[in-house]
Length: 96
Image 1: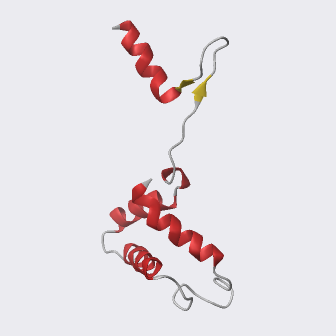
Image 2: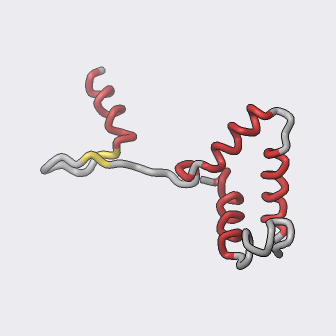
Image 3: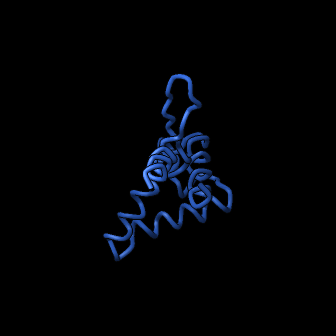
């Protein structure tokens, strides 16, 4: 998802940076400029005065399901798989 792309890259960079969490903090480690901006943005959310909004934003960032689009398919014997995101719409359209 485009709005989570920078966060995803930041977390990938953090995971690949040796020593973070052991002898290095996020402030000591060498990171790209983009990752430094994301780190600072996350810190500002952690320290935001509007705690409710900050927690809601951080929960969305922490939820891995927001980083990709997922689809589940219904398989009926003898028919092509139907994406569940369309299955309900198709059924409703048939009824109308």
